[in-house]
Structures are given as C-alpha cells and as structure tokens.
Image (cartoon, one colour):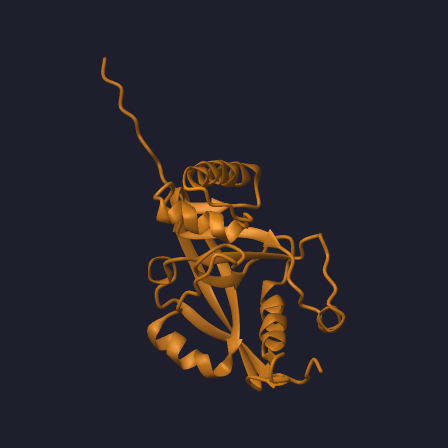
Length: 202
C-alpha cells in the first residue's frame, strides 16, 4: 500500500498600515518599501506595519506613530511637517509566517531561543535576548524561513507618555514585520491618509 503525504499550504492575508514622512511616499509607490535592519527592532529586520489585533484601528495608530516619529529629540525640532499613511495587502504562506500572538508562535520562538543559547555557549558569548535578535538569528542560521512576523507590543503612541517617559507592561499594538516586501506586498500600496504634524513634543 502506498501512502501519499499531501501538504496543503495556506496563504495568510491581512491589511497593514505604515506611517511615514509624506516625502517618502513617491519613492515607496515607485520602488516599494525598504526594510530596516537591527537586532533591537521589535520583530527583527523588516518593514513595519500596524495591523488589526488587540487594537481595532491600526490606521489611526499608524497616524499617531508618523506624527510622533517626526520629532527629533536631539535637535529639538520636527524632521518633517507632513505625515502619510500607506495601506498594503500583506500575503504570506503560513509556513513562512511567525505569529507571536498565539501559543504556537511563542513555542517556536522559545525553541529558537534554546538553539541560540546553545550556540552562544559554544563560543563563550552572552547576550540579553530580545525578540528581534532571535528572529534574525533564526534566519541567519536557517532554522526557519520567516518572511512575515506578527506580534503584540507596547508602543508609546500618546504624546503625554513620551513627554513624561511613561511605559506600560500591557501591550497596545499589533504589528508585523515584512522581511521581503517584494514577495509579500509587491506594488500593492495605496496612500490612504496624510496630514500635518501639528505639535512638537518640546
């Protein structure tokens, strides 16, 4: 008797909202998104979007982020005066999607951390683990092919919280990091909102 194994891969789809300087819009619409790189980023290397999850209005969160992110705290002035929010339909094969908003995704991240700790022990290196480092480690070591990661995080989106340097332990945003925008977004990008940065943090 022959046994045939059939693997059915599902496509995960969701809406993403990216807040930025309005001056970036034309280049993004023309050439697509560029990723940011760094182990200290929330979910590792990628282009970041607010998505629906623990908050039901990710577009408004992208607006808040774009406005507050305009402030240059070193030079004490806004880096830009007009913000924009771009919408994208994000699609990813579920085999390349790490969802840290559920128990299965967290279990995978725990496994990645175990492998990372074992490798670092062999070279005598110690590091304070953060999620972004582990996700980048998983890609570098080819443990898992991660194209899109989703997770719940806390981001200071309230101006008063930034002025007084207040933080909470309870997450307020669901975000995702898209590592390969050309694969998971392509040119499927629309400008959905823009406006003026109306205040300075001071």
